[in-house]
Image (cartoon, rainbow, N blue to C red; front, side, top):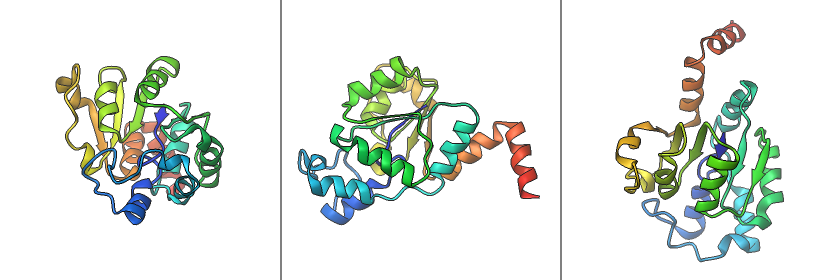
Length: 190
């Protein structure tokens, strides 16, 4: 599985709203200066981002089911160590962490190198590209990605986008689609 970091598992948007007053209707936010995330202030902002509730728990469940979890991020390469530490601090499982990738790089890693069966993403342009190339595309819902741009095969594939607002929705879908896991979790609750 290929998992984006910012605004998919980490609420970086909240920090960007606090720092720049960004609108969540445009992606990427034009208020953020080019190269900002390569600065000390930008790296600190990435460190401050809080994880979305239940994201780590959901990805741990997927890892326990045998899925490899790879984080594929546009964060600058200089943020790799910081990102690995952030994931560890917040209890995320990680088989691989890649930073410094542009959209094309993320798409190639997800589809060719990882041959991901599922991708978790928030970028609408990348989502439109991935639609035709991955079995499942989970899109963290934001105002800026509610209308996916038209792309090759995007019209019929748009029905395959699984939008989620909260990671608890993903966890529920994983559990309910796996009867053995649902029974196991039910026994834990007794």
